[in-house]
Length: 588
Image 1 (cartoon, rainbow, N blue to C red):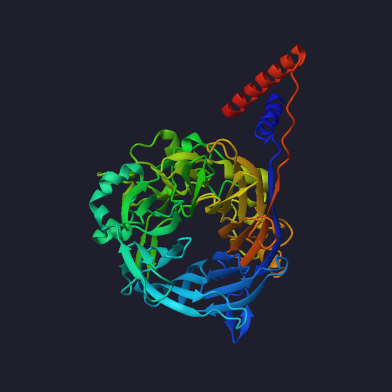
Image 2 (cartoon, rainbow, N blue to C red):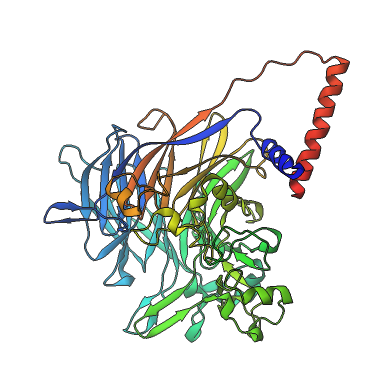
């Protein structure tokens, strides 16, 4: 009973006592077609037609890309969004979209010729002709992933992932990862300059970088670091002189000087010690059992956004996790392995307790870990059990990438309390009801934090954290201390976890935001609703939703009159009790 009461006190002590509250509430959802066969729109679950998005606040048009399609969606009536135009590119894959200066920038992967990735620029949607017109194509290299224009549209930064592909048959080609800088000195036309930055100067520095967490993953056939590196995401600092380029699979961030146009550093993100936190590593334990384990988590960040708080520059980072896994015809290579299948000889430093846990599928036996050379010493032994992803969001300083805050196991714990049916869940079978797919992802990346975004409302910096599995958005805020984000709300586009199947909810147009691939915050003065909103894509559901960011911020309380001796004693007693409870909560 005492422990229960103390737990209640702990919950109370973590409430935002000044009354500032944030809630997410859906305004509307539009379902996006995956194809237009014979002019007829076709829809489907598990068809990634809405992956990335951008918003033109002047014309109140949202552009989304996914698969072979670019869509323009009129959101001027936020209760009834309407698709007004589309561009279809068979044989190609749109990977990103941004809008700037009356133009729509897209990145595209050429499936037939992977070296022929390019940026395609279109004019913005023309309401008179009801069309989107192509303006310019710029080749950038193999598999461009993200694009980021500067605010004046004079410069475009492209993260060219250089993801490995099959070529020739039954063999692998791993092209260089690049950061491409495109400059438009006058207007957006064919008079541009292009600079491609590679990572070859770091090929002989891998040993030096490795202690910070930098990974050289695929080393077969002498594959150099510059080809193994995979630029994934781009964030810009306040004056747009520095780009922070996330190298997801390499567990690192590169800094790029946009003025002198060179890569100035590769910074490792380190590792997360799960022995000091709690983790559910098994999909066979019939529940959500969180315990400490002697496992190191590789952050393997996906998206990152820049923000400034109290005069200091930070990155908010989504620690999704990702593995390199190649299956090209008869050629197969993977860094993933079930921890229970590792031989004792490759893990000579493990303690007896961990060795026993590896023999049990309900404990560590099913956990996916890396067996890449990136985690091995000169004797070929793994230095630790390295799991994929941080199952969290982090805040890091931009000047040295030092970790200021990590959410630890907070996302998993809060999700279980809020909606245990979604704990580490995944849309595994469309005929299942969501609770039947509970716990499927515990062995592999957990909630899989995918996208992050920031926004300022009522003077508070808000942090939005979107999780892929199966689809949730957490909201935190920063008040006085960047190391103490305050939790507010969990949103999901899954209205029913017990009655209907995934497919039934989709068919009834109730399901949305499964795999929140992208989120964009829009302040009230630019929003179609006149209030702060998020535009959220659901890759698996093929949806775009407008989510209201409802904020309650009560007026400041009047100053207290001078306290009497008795009331002062009472206040001091309350303060001592509160401090004691907070201390004990930290010890629980």
